[in-house]
Image (cartoon, rainbow, N blue to C red; front, side):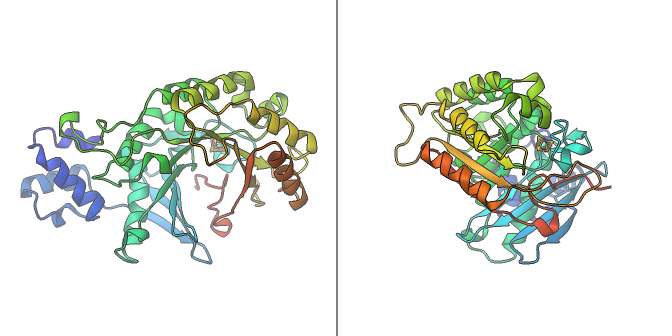
Length: 368
Ligand code: SF4
């Protein structure tokens, strides 16, 4: 990250001062960092300006806010803040501008991949919302509590930047968001899932500067992994998600099994319900069978079910750009829930946020 380079000749304590200024004081201009020397403030203002430019859209009920972050090269990365009734504030971040995965139901995938984001560009999305929440009150409850890498792009194909961003999010001097409250949603890139399984976010690992200078993280562990499965039928999956042509369900299953064994954590499955495509009774039984193949490791915390599926409602929007699907009928969703529940699988229908601001799943797209 650029900051590491900028601070390399500075005394060790500068790192903490700078982290505090960015992430706790939430300053928007380095001139406001009163404890930094003038020359360093000037350098930071030039090389790492804190101003974040973004277009902002607020949903009618005000419970979600979408931003299009304006990047240095003129591209835009979109992110959404979702305020939950229970006081949680979740930010859905993008890891890339556009996406190379080409899932046929997704507006983001339609435009292809423009480029991957840097860790700082990912962090800026969160910082922007943290600043908005700060204006609503000083209490910790008004801060961001959860992060989902579920915006534009495939996070595991921007692996290094996403990992660095997670370290910064998790770092207690920065955002202090526990790694257990951070989720990565992936179409399922087997090699990257296996790599991630070996990358425990450890107390020694930190955001900036050499390890000896770094403070502790908020929590050690792995981010939650959510696999966008969308069907347990290989032939259908290859039709709707091109990634499945290169990595079939058997290969994906082996990677998921490895992740579970290495981390002791469960993997969540995402299932977008498309009318007449993947919502038959057989589809539900196939899904249950696929999910149940994974066994809970001995160290898995008792008290919650190991198997978990998010049933996602398709957002019915009009677009000339992609083949438009229809959301499954309510009865089909209930049928899925019942079949999954009878198989001992927790199934939750994902609440839809921000349809009116195109902030819902599969609607984040590069806009010309
Ligand atoms: Fe990419 Fe996700 Fe859209 Fe698929 S659904 S094209 S992985 S952004």
